[in-house]
Structures are given as structure tokens and as C-alpha cells.
Length: 321
Image 1 (cartoon, rainbow, N blue to C red):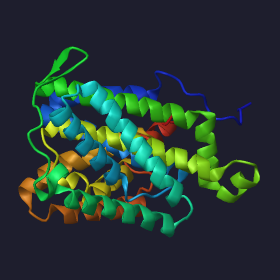
Image 2 (cartoon, rainbow, N blue to C red; image 1 turned 180 degrees about the horizontal axis):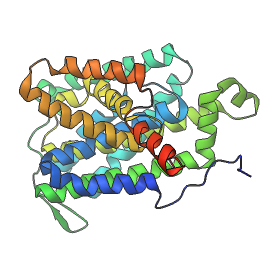
Image 3 (cartoon, helix red, strand yellow; image 1 turned 60 degrees about the vertical axis):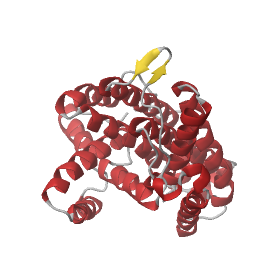
Image 4 (cartoon, rainbow, N blue to C red; image 1 turned 180 degrees about the vertical axis):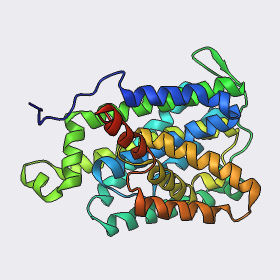
């Protein structure tokens, strides 16, 4: 007799094994620098997957936390001389705190009003960056970051070493989100997504759970921003523009928000396809838009759902653990 309780999280499971395989083979299939970029944006996309997939919150503001983490990382590495590991920890913490504080205000509204608040705060962050040009560099970005760093005594300078760092960071974030989804906390988030009114009637403090989810997602985006700054050696102003929020949202939808693994699939697909199309046609974004429309209309579960359906059909079980 099947149990009605949520399936317990297991390590390793099929989803985790697939993610590990993708991360392991990627630097052999594409240039290592491109693989690092995929891992960084997959980490950022995880923040959208957590919010939209787990609790049903659509955010256009994740670029704010990514940019905040990137600028903080740049300043700490360049001006404070802090090591890479404590810098990334602080970028993650700062993203969590900022998202939590803004979340207190944003969760007061639902639906389109919540979405508009995320958009408004994202725009405020961008204009704040332009206004504080003595600190952020304004339209020129934050430059002169150190190119050679170390992590726990290990040098991080070569493309391969940096890919291992970004892939490891994504894997840790992925496992954390996967574990969170399988926990009682994740079950409450799912209940809120399915029926917020009923969850509140059952005694759950819905606003607090939403704030916690927003804060965790902000921390993940902050980590991605820190990795991006260290990877580039400078912080471009578009790290905090609205476009970056739109890009990671598109990656999440293409990959599928039903599983954290969709963040990696979406990042791989978007990054590699955009890289190839940009060489062929200057208006390549139009093709991405058409693809997004097709996925929303005919494959709402994203590309990851294809593998899940195949596993259900031929293996008798879902790949989404």
C-alpha cells in the first residue's frame, strides 16, 4: 500500500546522479570557461526554482541579490583583501539578509502585486548602483579585482580550478534545495503553493514561511553573484540590471521548476544555445522567445519533465526525487 507521506530524500538518488554526471562531463564537451558560466547561472536559477517551483512566488528581482552579492564580493576581494571563501560566505549571507528584509514588505501582497514589488526593488537596486558610482564604479562597473585567489589553501587561477569551484558551489546549493524540498518545511511551502488559504487556516504562519523562502533564494542568488564577480575579475553593471533577472527566470522556465535539477538543465540549454545562435544571427533572442512560448504552451514542465516522463514510462518511477 502506497504511503501518503512525502517521499524521503535520499542520497544519492537518480536526480542527483544525473546532475553529477552532467557536471562531470561538461568541461570535456564545452570550453571550461563556458562550463563555469553555466554552473554560475545554474546556481542563480536555483533561486527562481525554489521560489516559483516550491512556493509559487514569481520574482523579477533575483538579479538584485545576484548583483548585491557580486558588488560585495568585488569590494571585499579588491579593497579588504579578504579570502575567497569568507567572501563567498559573506555574499551569500548578505543576499539572504537583504532578501529577508525586502521579503517582509513583499509578502504583504499576493499575485501580481508581489511580482510588481520584486520588479520595483530590482529597479531601485540598479539606480542605487548608478548613484553610488564612487563605490560601485557606476556604468563602468567595478574593476581591478584580483585574478589569482585561493580557497582553503588551494590556488584558484586556472579555468579548470574555477570550474571545479563553481560546479561544487552549485552542487552544494542543489543538494540544499533538494533537501529543503523534502523536509517538513518544504512540505509546508508546497501546501502554501497549492492552497494558501487552507494552509493559513491549518495554523501555519504563511507570511513567515514566504519570508524564509525569499531569504533562502536571495542567499543562493548572492552566492551566484559572488562567483560571477570572481570569475570575471570585475563586476559589470548588468549584473544588477533587470535583464539578469529575466534571463535566470527564462532559464528556470526552460529547464522546469518542478525539480531543482531543472535549474542546471535550463542553464545548460540557454547558455549553449544562445552562444551558438549569437554567432549565426544578431537577433537570436527572438528564437529564444519563440522557444519559451513553445515550452509554456506545450511543455509546461520544462525540459526536465521530458526525462521524468521517460523514466515513468520505461522505468516505472519518476526521476524527480
